[in-house]
Image (cartoon, rainbow, N blue to C red):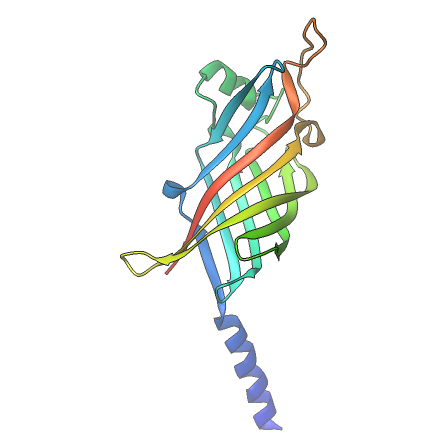
Length: 192
């Protein structure tokens, strides 16, 4: 009986030891969004500050659990007045809701390069399920002995689902800002 107790403890320790924690490398990653403006063009923005962690069983990506946090005040579209408007209560209300948060619920392998990432996205304290496409760029050892993995994540959300409801109508009937937001992220994760 003593042997089985130790065996269970050893097994639990071995299972814990196989967990791999990957941290996002912000200097080699970008979080972008694109929104149609006045129906005729597209505005691109980015978030300058974010943090993310992926936990896998060893290097098996299909076991990935993803958590990502974005600083809403770090929004940058290249136009100060527009960025301040996005930080206001018309959009993110960065003072009251300083973070956008994503927590995965599934990471499904489609083929060797494609995955489907499902999770809960929270903006302005409104949480909704989202589904994103993931393109796996590969895994390499860097010159300092760390393992790196790269991904491109894309998807679409409706901003009004998350309480970002400000808009004006044009004389032609179109909206100044579209409801649909395209998300495009190029992220690199590293573990040592």
